[in-house]
Length: 222
Image (cartoon, rainbow, N blue to C red; front, side):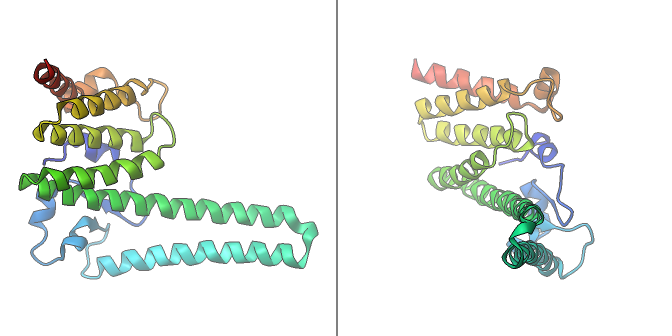
């Protein structure tokens, strides 16, 4: 299952520690000297210990979040009158935890999507649906605004899920999924910082693919 430029562009805002590759053909070409998991996470500086450095960096962030929380807790315990300072530290810790969760969630989606593509290539659509469903659940929990990069990613995963349902001859379920994706696309307004106009949508083929698939479902449903 080919991951198009649309999916790549919606993940263009990488974290400071990693940049992700979403074309599984590229991933396969890079697996000669790496494990499958290592091929999913590619760092700015290519070294043999990329995976180790990723987890060390994530671990450092987690330790920092805990340190800030402990500092705030200690400050409040020792002097309740400093509650405003303590509260600021707590909020700083929360923001760092939330950042870590977003990074981990996107890495998890990337992994699930890659596994789904393997099952799809082998026509094992039940497992393809299962892993795409996992992606959808995570992305829905992490929607921030109707026009966020997560929304764009969710639309593309919904498209793949609808196509898989269609391949399973579950035309009604596929049509409902397509409508859900279309509603998300309709919510993307020009005021969004990452808005995509109609021409750009059609250029990357996402909107046209969704419309074509919906037409096929309507035809099969009579």
